[in-house]
Length: 206
Image (cartoon, rainbow, N blue to C red; front, side):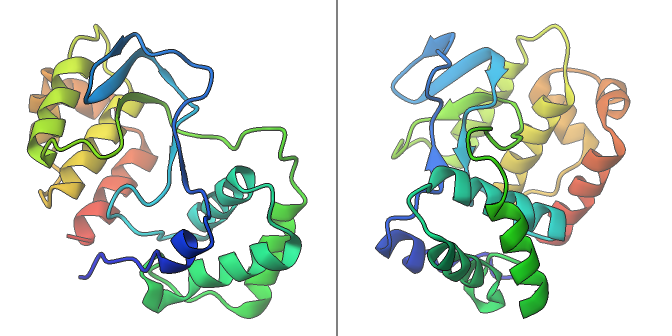
């Protein structure tokens, strides 16, 4: 399956789809990465992973983040952006979205309060833009840093899952446990139903 996305419209129109934390300060910072021992919810990196949008809920969240990061857009401009995202050949989504449904989603998103940041997953390791580290090197760094934690949480598992997927490797409990330096039992215990479903979806996209 092709993972290529057509980002031309976003880049040409200077649409912001990635933003580093604004007020949260990293616990540790190097030329390659920023590490937040307690994690941060302020990092938005849409389309960082090769994983595509596979559900209406995920589509709505992506559009909300785009609306939040680009408050200068008017209603018509936001609708046009949404149309680009749901146009299947552009490589963002895996399913077809009807015109009426898209209009409904865009309206609901545009009515939400932009003063409230969209719900976001916790990130502990954020690599700086344009770093030359390979995916394998990044994965080792993530495993090393997160592995310092006494307790492995679902967000740690989620982050490693996406990194494995980006490397084109099948996501397995054993690989996750090895990277986080914990037992397979610990991973099983901390994998909720949503994570298990995400694991299956990501593996299907390989």
